[in-house]
Length: 337
Image (cartoon, rainbow, N blue to C red; front, side, top):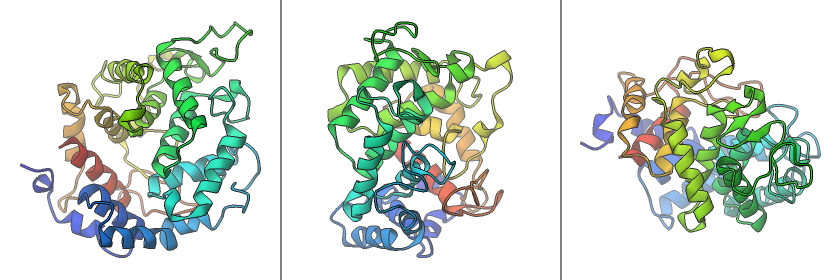
């Protein structure tokens, strides 16, 4: 039975309606798998960049390539450059469709990416952490940005997972060392009292999963294996990754929302693992069951959280069927099948 036959209703037709151009474009691309030369897909992609959410975000960009405030772009949340770029990547924006996106990618790399490969909230190597690194690497790949600086960012990210070629935090003789936030291998994070961070791991693995296969070096493949072993070391449906004081996991794991910034959820965890080649792993069974069971009688998924009023777009009402969340769920299920 195909994934579409397991839906409770005709939600795919709902996503293909004309009232949300970006959703329609991504549904044609990812769910119907239209080839790049398909005329309907090309028309939908062009419309998505002229109208709707992508256009809204791009129209707020400074001509130099940043949002709100010049510099590394981490603040203010969630309107500044970092968050705008993550959002554009999730909206389906592509460099080939608007020259402003290329300008923004270049600006981000010039101001937030260090010469050693760290994406940084303050422009210095020590201002890096897994969720920021993973989010921006994933966003730039999604946007179609191809640059040697991004290759170096992926190399740094892979080394921080495996520990290969990275000096301890206290070794001040090299910039290729761990820092206060990115403090050790296997997704250790200073904000999680040096414990491995499940949120950060998902972002890193999502970026690796989006990276074209020909760019996955031996180092990156080793990091993918190690990352998958960590994310599958517990049942992803339980999200029982290490927490300070061994408290229960953050409730956001079980809420599917849009956009997805530094928090994450079971859906994105499964997406990252499937993209990295672990879709057939039986340890995903409970998480996939959880995703399927969240659809309603019409085959739609509800909005668990949003950033309405905090970022450049509004995406709907909480606890109501939502096109963006339904698209996210269907993208994962289609790729899994």
